[in-house]
Length: 98
Image (tube, rainbow, N blue to C red; front, side):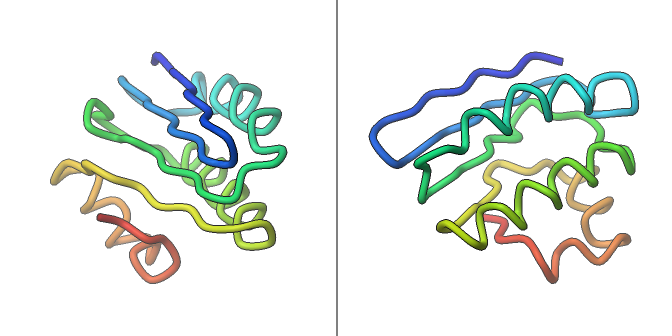
């Protein structure tokens, strides 16, 4: 998994590629959490994300909770298989996906 974080003022873009699973989710969390300070608009780009496990969903959910308090979060470029995971787990109801 690769993570690139681009911050511009109060906006952050987090581009993720690969699989977000039990092995990589802690790494994602360690990179994302410190970068949220002062951010009011967060966008995850999942164009190259192949898979998200329950550990990955936990990181996304905890990030969503933080961003609900300080601004907004959306996920863009979600492929069909990841969208299916969001749908089955009920995450479509709590996440903004474009």
